[in-house]
Length: 495
Image (cartoon, rainbow, N blue to C red; front, top):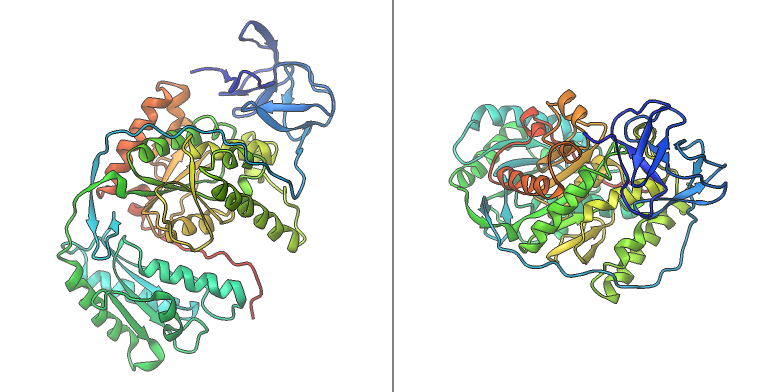
């Protein structure tokens, strides 16, 4: 295993790939660097003397300014590095991308839906319209699983608990209704029981306007206040959905049918070197074969946004990306919050020092493909290729947003580890081998191999092949554990 990596020829810092002792001498290119202090794994050390107030480069880009003079071989982190970012900025479109060379496709075994969509799971979902019936939904889930699982064709029956659907106002209520409608039409669902109470703001009659046309044999509605025994009524309706769904079978589907969400959480200093770049290389492989990827967590684009803007395929997409960034900054300002209050304590412990440092690593997940679409929160993907989605950095909120925008699966990179999952298969990709070994019941794919035994190209192909396995029915660790959650982007007042 390498001791360190210098990511870009222009960089003034290198990243330790293992804990490095004070006093050791490292050969970096044509020079020697003696470490002046211990450098934890994932953290940075200076390759040259850096004057106070001077920019510090990593990934070939500025990650902040030196707070004080930094000596060659010194540890570079939050104690001597500060963000260089401001608030609202002016942007110019300076196109800098190459279209990907088209490649031969591939196939996976998926479910073709009557509306033309393709699913990778065949599950029955129970969706409460309000948190008041969460416990009823969970009771129905338990009874339905006993009655119908294991069963031919239907892979799981899942109740999604949440605190939304009532006492919300304005945009919050709109977000909730759009998310519910998107879930009801999601291709991973063989059918959905929409479970209402009856007096909530987002009751079933109100939701119908958002849901639109749907398959009445597979989408059923039950308002608990209207029946004597809601659990028995619900089981009867799920039985009807089951009879329709039990005959569904996987069939060969082109990889161009895949829509994959990309998200990171609990990042460390290796995330931008291993896990995020391998997801970016995967994204390029999928897009070159006609597929689609979605990148979100807008606050973690701040500081690297121009890299994405200059990869927009045209001026219109560029302007939509500018609006995406500035609207999210304005969201922080409206709530009197600091735009650059990031990274998190876990990020810092792992070696990330500023938001630029985090964002430049985060956006590695986008690969090199042109940006072809920009989505508002709750909007379904329309464009093949790389899309940007408006959602915050919060892990569950962002992952839910990816799923309701059409992603059949989420690739989630992490340097710290997390057990959660959203409504679609959520694959955990470790940035380092120690995490992959220590949390083997959480981690599905080890990107730490990139600095040990495999090239980026080999790891990307391995990830591509693994994604096809998951799309064809193999379960990720969080699915095996039975973890399924949703969180809706809440921005306003609760009554």
